[in-house]
Image 1 (cartoon, rainbow, N blue to C red):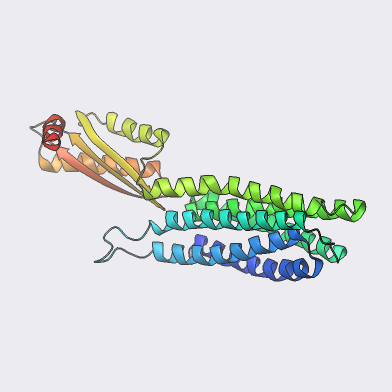
Image 2 (cartoon, rainbow, N blue to C red):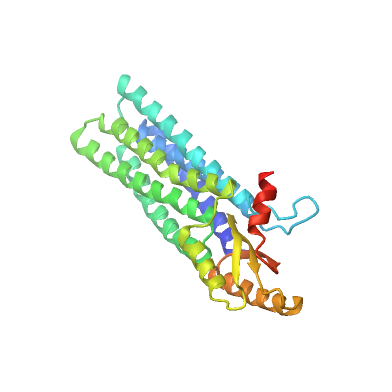
Length: 297
């Protein structure tokens, strides 16, 4: 089993445990903050299950229906995760407003504080693990999952602080105000996840820094006189690069092919943690202007 899939199995198991703990105490205590954290953990569980499915599907080999594989399900999973986070935040925001309008006393404060301490510790270990996996694999789904649980870590800490303050001050308004703060933070955290996923689904080019590295490799090859139509895109754990390389008209196809293979290998080495697919068109002359005229007509 890939490390990424193992990470989703672990995060799913942790989320399931946290849901049971928080939901039980949240319902019994009447705390909006604890209940909000429980709902967030329930959504974590759903998202982690979907992430496992996405990673399992994305690693399938290309077939007659999907010639380029199914790697785009990874950014799709990231977008869905961001949307789920946003909707859960809106629900928490609504529940907090309801409690402000119709205050109700909290109960079982000791149990609430205890479950949030345990949740904070468990989530901290999970975040450290997911960050380690994301750093090793550069996988977008795991990065999104790590970011998601990192927001949980902050919200768990905030809920814990609020419960302690309420137990000392008896000010119940702290609970819904904290719920609103958590909701706003969750939406703020979801925006970059959704943005990155959408850009990948729309086949956005690689970052300028990565593009420059590819250009440097092409420019460093003395046999290649020039190049044009450099196009790049990223799809989950896959990178696609296509380019027209201009060779001297007298070079043999065999020699041009040898040079192209060497250049492709250098480009692949730029992205050791990705599966890089390179399509190099070998031109005996610069046909960019001719093709541009044909495209115009």
